[in-house]
Length: 301
Image 1 (cartoon, rainbow, N blue to C red):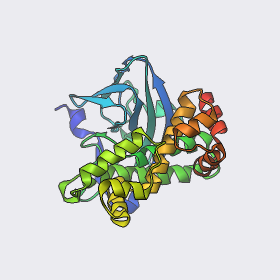
Image 2: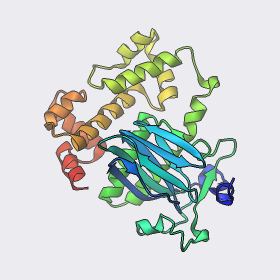
Image 3: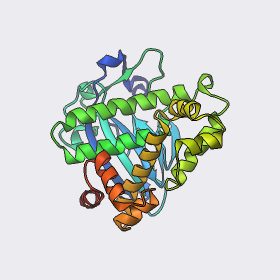
């Protein structure tokens, strides 16, 4: 093991109230096939693959990243990313630190220039007592709720309305909490006899968000009461069934608005909102802008 690998990432055990993440960068990205330059970061990056396939070489390991997976790239650790799929892969990239300790103005402040390394700048990873550090197993399959948080974070960071820094901090705290809890939720002591069936049903909702999903229909398919189903669902997904369905539909709507030329009405229908007025109202309620405005903004970025 090299000196660099043994030293980084720098870590500090801290209470949750000490966590104060600062977001330095949050964007959607599209990259063509090929390897990117080997590099180190002064801050931390969450790199989520929304479409296609990628790979990361880090700490002598080769991590394959399928669509729907995320990798945490720690400060100070050499890594090399590669886009595997053709003609491109699409990502959400989020740079941050845990303790609001870095001043980031440009990309040069995030990426290490190996000729002039500033060792005092490497950000420190927050570690929670009794929880595995997020960088220990760097690859995650984030929940739909986590993906929605990332998309909201990109929206806030891009639009920068008054108070966006505070909103980004709040969203980042929620996102880090979701990632910390993901391994905790998947441990055997949190499984139930209905766990596998519920996970399979959640995948079906993701594949077919336009289907008429309701609490009653989900409970019936699991042969459970509505109340018991809702309790188990929230334990697995981190949110009630109706919020999960809404998050999946809106996530799909954002994707179609960004990546297709379908009409607003067609996007609504494909996402489970056959009434265009209701779709526009719900989209504005959760995103803060209309579907048409969101599409226009995404094409400008």
